[in-house]
Image 1: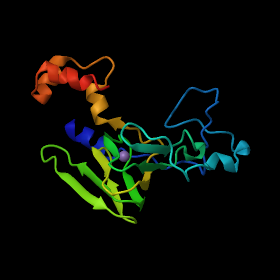
Image 2: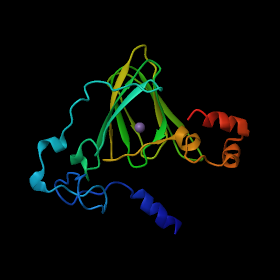
Image 3: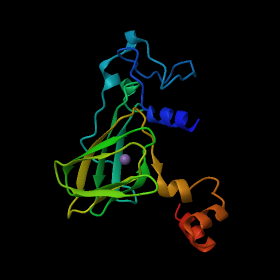
Image 4: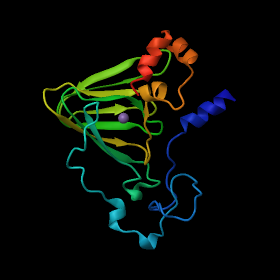
Length: 208
Ligand code: MN
């Protein structure tokens, strides 16, 4: 049984489409989803379904000192069933993309300008940190399902573009998924897991 589960996990990537295009029909009357969104009538498909404008500028910066503009199937409906999406990230000096996971995608990141420290962590029991400082023109891969992060370590702002192998990669922020849950995870679970007292857990939780 365990080997069957392992085989299923190993094959967990987006399937090849069974038609040329399947533009997501968000207004479709059908609520049934086989895998992705129902297809818009091909007769109604136009160029704007495959297009997006506005990634030439940074968006608003968060408390982490970064601005993240994702283009998934929600912004480009023509990505439906195609297994790819993209994101532009801008960093203020010392800006961080906190440790997170994409449950459904490998990510390849390309530095357009600036100097970025990146890393990902392999699974148990090694938990090895694979890390590198990237310069302009450097690329780096974050394998699917792994905790990864980025930090601007240069003197000025930085910009990267990344591509992800899913129309809908998903994001699990490590800190939020532990300390920012609703409702909260039981204190006894977290005090044991982190080997700290309740006050420390409460303090961490209060940040969310
Ligand atoms: Mn990422």
